[in-house]
Length: 91
Image 1 (cartoon, rainbow, N blue to C red):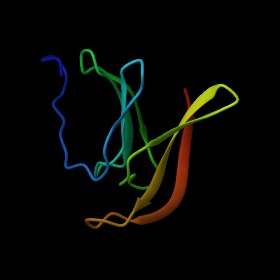
Image 2 (cartoon, one colour):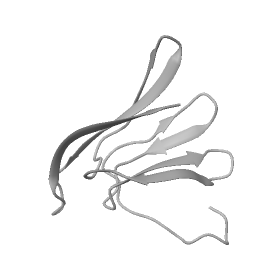
Image 3 (tube, rainbow, N blue to C red):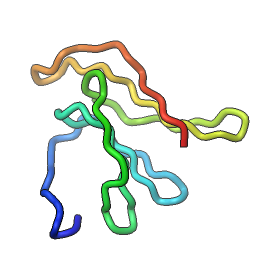
Image 4 (cartoon, rainbow, N blue to C red):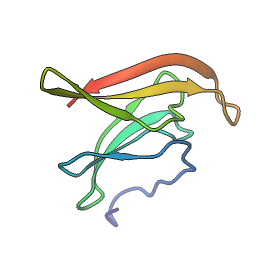
């Protein structure tokens, strides 16, 4: 993390997934966000709010040559609301 960015940190209830080109995908935090980091320098590249906490490890898959990443948004731990959504992104 660069010194000029706001510090962040949280317990995580899901592991990261790292792509072949060095992107790190994470979603297991209490703030209900899905994040993408650059593994070479730690820069936050993308962040979005999920419907409920994604206490899971993202899954990466491909269909017809296109890559996708999906996260289960089930929440339900540590006082967070429960959910039943899957959120997928194309890469």
